Every structure is written in C-alpha cells, then in structure tokens.
View 1 (cartoon, rainbow, N blue to C red):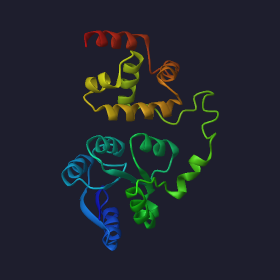
View 2 (cartoon, rainbow, N blue to C red):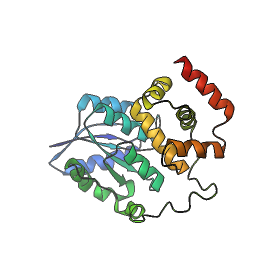
View 3 (cartoon, rainbow, N blue to C red):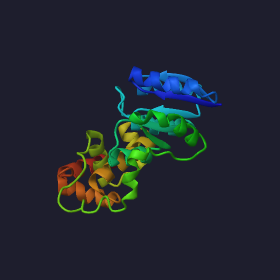
View 4 (cartoon, rainbow, N blue to C red):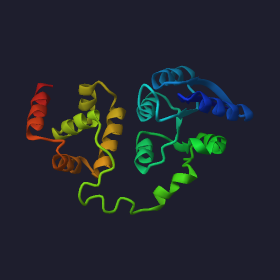
Length: 225
C-alpha cells in the first residue's frame, strides 16, 4: 500500500487527486493540507511514502516545503504545478524533489506515484524538452540575460557567501535549515548562470548586488560570530 499526503491550496485540484487515488486499490490518502506549514506537520505526523506538493502555496514557497520534508522525513516528493519553465524545474530537483508533474496532465498522476514509489524519477513529458537540449544555456554569459531577479533572501545569502561563510553559519545567521540555504544557493546560481561561489560573487558585483560597503559590513558581522 502506498500512503500519500497532498499539499495543495486549490480545493478542486485536491478533489481531483483524491478521486484518482481512490480508484487505485494500492493507494491510501493519509491526508490533505492547503498550506505549506500545515502540510509539513501532516507529513511528520502521518509519515507517508509519497507527498504531492504544489509550488504556489499561500504561506510559503513549495520548494522550501520540499527541502523541509526531505530533511525531516524519508518521504518521496512529487511536485505538481502549472509551472513548466526550466528554472523552476531545475530548482525543484535541486531542492530534493523526486518527480515533477504538471497539473494539466492529471491522467499521469497514478503512473507518477507508482514510478516514484519504485524510486524512479518521473518527469512530465511536456517538459522533458528542456533536458534534451544540452546547450539550452548557451549565450547566457553575454550581457545581462539572466532569468530572474534575486529575492531578498538570495541577496542576503549572496553577501554572506562573498564573506566566505559556510552553509551552516549562513543557516544559523538567517534562522533557516542548511537544506533551505542549499536551495536558495542553487536558485541564485541558476539565475546568475554561475557554476560556483566565485562565479556568483563576480556576477553579483557586475549586477550591483554586491557593493564594497556591503562586503565590509558582512565581514564585520562574520568577525562577531
């Protein structure tokens, strides 16, 4: 029996998933949650095999929910979302997602669940094209062709990275988990087309995210740790 939890804020989507699960005698729905915080608690309490997580939750980013679930439990996570852009897909897997399913392809839910339960990765057929193009990032280094602006948290983490702080120290300073830090770092690396921390720092200076005064202040804070 495959035990499942659904974290999704849209009632109609939850209803559809519930109906699909009910049709399979090998699946059991342990519970549903309409927010990330409630979902994490539910997963910890019920200890399911599979968790379906929407990215666009009302209280927190679904990717953060994925990181927390993977850090605290052994559950497999399937992202279920309308977002099919390459940045979001890559970020989801970097944060620990095991499979990725689009909401418009609900007929694949059963297949995705069974495959993920067998420890096989499921990637929605409509987005596999991103991974069939090895040069999809070619040319991003020229000019300022970056996919998205950094969030406030990503900028803070970039400044702390520039000071040489480890993921553990960054997590302690920002009161978040190391997995969450890794997720944010992965996101900012992708947005800035950086291969490593040195590349991120260089791009951060070029784009104005890192100023000399910021680095000085961060160094002062580091010495105070």
